Length: 333
Ligand code: DP6
Image (tube, rainbow, N blue to C red; front, side, top):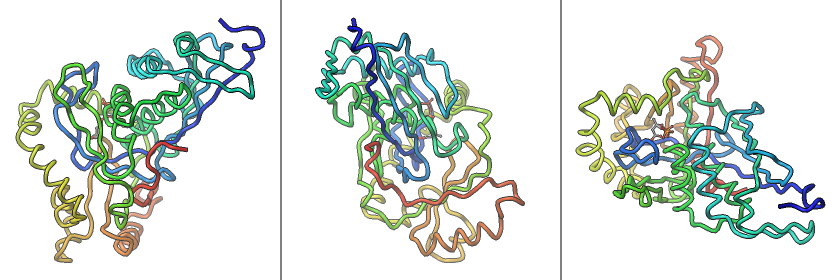
């Protein structure tokens, strides 16, 4: 397909996506292949300086196959999830022209052009800090940029969802809701931004990295086991979550920390001694605690207490990561 002169070119695009932490969790799929959840979920997108994936994608007629490197190590692209994202983005690719370099790619050429993908996480991978969320959001965003895809963020989130469910929420900054959707083909299962990153910018999130080791049970298999074995899962999805989603949306809109913290659960002792809640906490699928302080003053006190009670070396605690709620509107570089 390429002329000899063209065979030399490499076209690249780079993007960065932060991870997100759910405050109403996604847990359980109704369709494993399309990654359709059994409940809506809400998350907060973090500050990309501390927890994000940076991905560069390159296309060239000289590449004989699609390949990917994660944190410098080549990984297999055989998994259906990567293939779904690549396929969906390729389907939406448009013409690209780089006049200066004399490169012209027709939209139908993208089906035949192979890509090389290099992705880095600036935080522990697969340790329960939603690295797949940042990774797939970034992959989809960056491939879209390379292939001149013109879809809106909702559509991109729906594609990122097919890489990893939680990734659909990392397409946006701020507080984000993943609407589970009702259709069988997943076309209405996508994320929407509830409020942007400037809406509640007092919040400070501290992540106590208790272990940066890869977790033993992945979220994917953990939730599969739950779907297969727990009679309570459907109860949670149908009876508990819908009401909580409404309350959480209300709390976020009104910057109502009391309600926000009550819903997540309190950092018991401290909040009891203060009368009104100062800190909220949540965990994802790993051991690392995510603490949300109502403002910077509380965050400073909290960090002081944490460092005193759990000094990093002595307690085998890897590190603390501190970040403002979210800064970039997601993946844009
Ligand atoms: C506990 O999105 O990693 O973080 O869709 O199978 O890739 P797959 O799972 P994943 O699960 C995230 C689970 C969670 C809760 C959440 O982020 O909502």
